Length: 265
Image (cartoon, rainbow, N blue to C red; front, side, top):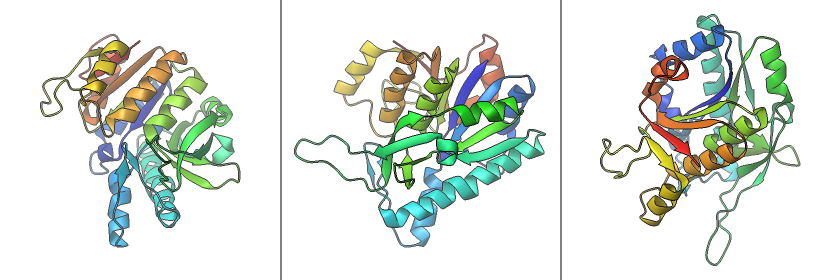
């Protein structure tokens, strides 16, 4: 079985390694797992130290050139290598890479749609091509790929890519069986103010209605868009849930239940 797991920056707690212990166990059981991680809160913290304010458009971090260096340092340097260290302590030979390595993620600058002009988000990119060979090489060598969402443009320069986008398009390129998008929310909520209004199974027709009602917004927008793209691209199952639910992954993969939203076409 091949699975892609994306964890958001808010799910990365280096004082609690239980979640990663579960992922390590899946790897030991023979599942081919690729881990994509975010790092939003950590980037914000480092930018604040430099006196820089973080701004977001459609759930995407505005990344001017002067912030790109810090963004890449936090994602590909600090967080990526700390995650590798966690898996090493679990007995898993992890290999930390970014989307720039091996032409894994090739991208272009992303411009959100606007009524009258293109909105320039700086060094924010969209993944246009995935070259999964490096991931296959790592799997064949017995390694767990730990991937930071930094892509390269045609000139080889860095682009900050939304981790949900990176994970979904990687899952399609790998023809993964399942894609898991974990963050700090329990899934798609019918009422964003009520965490108990979780929608366990969400069809695309319902998504369009929720969009029109303004109930899908912010960071949930790229998750929903990528869920549909992954399913249409051949991924068999997409699940959106809260990071703490990772501890139930073995049960879910064995046919049990896990709190969150399963997206279907």
